[in-house]
Length: 166
Image (tube, rainbow, N blue to C red):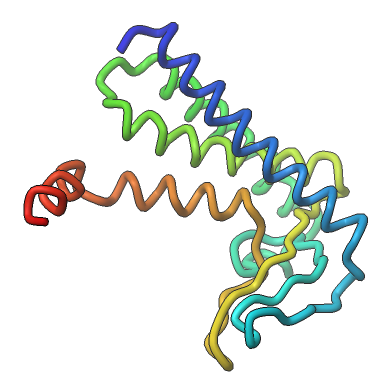
């Protein structure tokens, strides 16, 4: 795939993921009470506004402000720049891996943007689970990252095999 098509794919995926994530975060910050979870679907889904100064599941919450800034802003920002450069310049990717890497980049960038504009915190508002088995509180950017990673980990031919066996 040539560089123009790669840039178009990255742009469209990023616009979609970042736009949806930021729109839902704005909605959550305007409509939800801070640190109050509301239960839906027989408690399968909980929705409530929180600010996470750490990473996934609050990892790094106890780090000093300087270490959090160094890791979550400088290191993550450097990683995202490198990932974007790789996505745009690597012609060895198929469309599936390009979309997957673009989703990882987009989710990471949207959370990075939160940190830079929200005093080092990321807005989270979703929690799913059954009974005491629950996820941490997350956001749409986290979902984009997870879908992108899963797409990268799944064999590219698994969908074709499933379709052929039906």
